[in-house]
Length: 591
Image 1 (cartoon, rainbow, N blue to C red):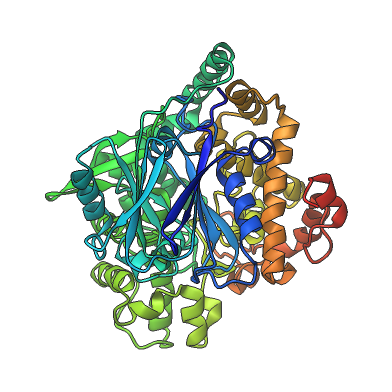
Image 2 (cartoon, rainbow, N blue to C red):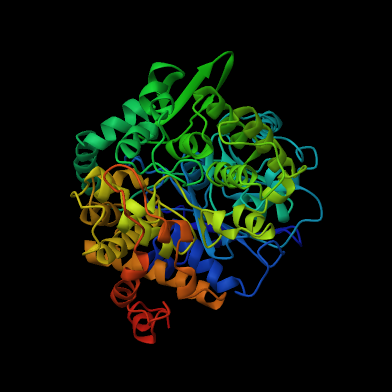
């Protein structure tokens, strides 16, 4: 009667055993669920000195208490691990239906350790957990794997999270796909899954998910539903999808183009969300309990799929100098089938394109070569030819050939689709992100570009460290709850606290919710410190720090992230090297 399934399952792949245990009450109270569960369990169980691709790493799949309760956009689950791409402790977030189905199968979290002798998959079935042979699935794409398991289990209600060939080959930015098109995208969780010989998790169940106060929750749900439906950003996402941002960022001269050499793509209209809606879009689609439906189901020339989302559209588009929307959609579909992070793939290819054009690496690829781009996606997934080197990420590749400055990454994770030179708060957020180059751990694009909850001048530094801290803490809490980040365009911390209180019966206000997010963030940061990360790593590529933008309103701007670090660290209660102080850890109950 508290929104939780009530149990967690511990899976030891080495011994082939599973153990079901009750979900600890203290874990619920102090870490909520989702990212909170994953990071707490991982930091408790994994020595910070391990190799991420060794059997000593673990994977934690965890939903939140709001996941699957029918709360609008309450569909998310998190996967936590030590990232093979960055070396940080990370969590990746996905929607669709799998998180809800995992809870209906009876589990708040699945904790996976060890390594199987041969490929296996985990079957979660109404309170039971069983490892089964997956040798027949090894080598299959994510779509093929999903279809094969549905046929094998003779139940179309089963939901599957799996890896494709990229995860099997341990591409460092391989992802985990559920329902074929929803991705735990960043950080290489798919590679960790592959390193363990775990091909998939299949979930089936009809266990009840009951809440503490149905009448109170009904009232709060109605309030948040109205706020989301009336929100202008949410309406635009339904009509044009996330790629509505293409024209917005381009018009502001902040759309990174040709490996961040410029921030304006003259052909942006051809790949925009508006053009997508007029050409290849068949219908919008949403995750479980979604009232926005930002997903794009596309169909053209006898092909169909979902997406591309904004980041992917930008990556295979402007960043690679490609203006062919159909080719971008094909690249997106390849990433889904092979199980690849569709941000790191195109930005790594863009790095190669610049190196090739400048004569730093002998390869025929050039900006705008869509056919060559598609070939490289397949080579990366299969670790064939140059793809084997690109599969290590742009930073390792560019460093190997003497030009690390051409990797547009932070903590070795490729940056997403916004130029930090003209969005100062966002630049600080992505540089200080505890999982590496990132946008969704603190979506500062919302206030600095979209004007939600209020419009901030993107070029100014004043007040930005406080905004970044608040957004980072709030996002950690949203991830723990099992909610979609897009609700934050319309909702505030009080709304989330009220949803949590009504669902779980744990009385919480906005300040307490933010404190939980701060606890999760500091726990991630502390673990990263133990892995050797410090102030030197809270930075951006030199290009963004030293080479000013030259066009439009932000001309002359560079990222000034280092001018904000001291204030940010002080607000966080960290020392000058970005290490949480004993006083802060004691305040948060972390020591």
